[in-house]
Image (cartoon, rainbow, N blue to C red; front, side, top):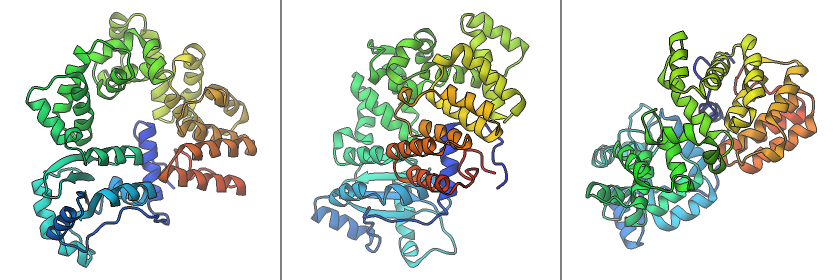
Length: 413
């Protein structure tokens, strides 16, 4: 395959690219959600009322990659089907039109237009949870893992905890910490701008700034240097990392700064004036990330070596994994790959992420240390679900055969 990367490389983007590639592979359908598209919408409502269930609608389009991810990997899971079939009457509604639409899609077309307008569907996938009479209780937008999806489904069966109830409480003046936090998180999943306001109020007023609840919200809503969480990221990284994980505070803060300014000699001086204690580290981080994102094989390794020799204890596992992916794609010599493995560190320092052992596995395999590579892939498999697990199993099979892993690494050749 042709090299795909002409943009900054981030793990969430990497995973999405791998997911899109694997959507073309063969599928396996477990006992997942039973979608009742053989019924009309009026029959769905009647059945939901008769069986004392809610209604779940998945609004999707034929061109939407995250929609396909949910359909193939999440909706087919046994635990997802067990909960949804017991609590909801479910339907899938295709919002776009194509020449290949089957009879079921055509039969639902008028209802699709009506329902998409009623529930203000603008992004895909949009999933709404309704009472039997059509009253909205909860909604989410975009792909998610099974645990997050099931949490939203449970909230969809409880009026008080769903997005719509939380929105009403916020707009009516509710400012208690927990409802504020719950609405911020729920609103963020649907792209509600009011979620940012709720998060801002929460972060500015709650005093327990180092609790997991506070810091996980800070992590999701701190996007600019003017946000209330940014100052805390810069001033107390050790305390934040103790809760969120190694190097997370630096990764968030430095990433925000790099998005805020375009580097030049003048901007470097600005950094030294505004963040004198962190300026040198931020500048080195900028050189490292730029070399990584450009796949600059000449400058990447020395930039990584310089940064990690000084700040190795302050870098996140996500950044370490990203460095490893880039190095595996650019270098083949054992000397540099052994150094990359040393940067990643021993397994016991690992987090619960599946990408970190996967990164180790790729390096170990390139060093012809197959048994250790297989051990790390097995760890990645144990930590993953649905899509990534299937990819990791394919990687494992290729390792056993002694084949090339280029089609599975984060840069595809």
